[in-house]
Length: 229
Image 1 (tube, rainbow, N blue to C red):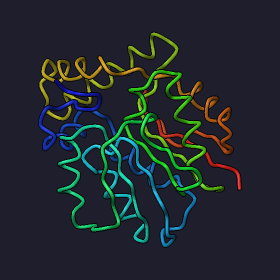
Image 2: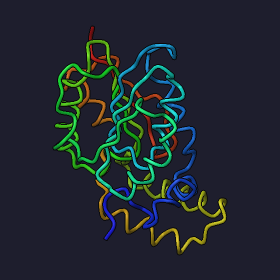
Image 3: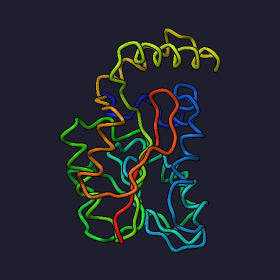
Image 4: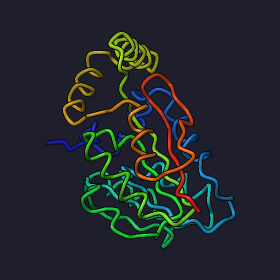
């Protein structure tokens, strides 16, 4: 049985597959990488929640060449692929299995940056709020949390529009629509996206400042905020 985030049974095909079913996947990653305030040359301590196959992890380690990353995911299959992909970065990356917010983060004032990509939407609203609280605690003063994720529209017609956009994207990538829909609907069983507006409010309630959306394409968004100095 697949777990949340395991859209593809074979983790080796996750990267090309997710690019085919998540519109502008690379742009979403670029927005996450560009949002933090730290200089590229800074020594940045990063916690990545829901690291998957390590695609964003590798980009973080490359973008911040003096950084270290603790990459967390609950899926053994995904982490096996991440270990292979990230081997070249040596001891700059630690890969560990765990769930959030239950297992990670547990530290206080430990990280300069906490990031997540296409993972937090598997939590319900109360779990998201709990996560934002513990992420806030885990950051050093001046640290940032940046999340790239699926969000929900309040308006039904916009949800329908987003579904149509995704199906058109899949067709443009050469996928058979029926095959895609089977995978997408199976992954929906684990999804519980909330509106972007609600999540921005929850970040402010957790204590974050400068809370803002950075990028959005239909129901995919990058947003975050900083812990006051």
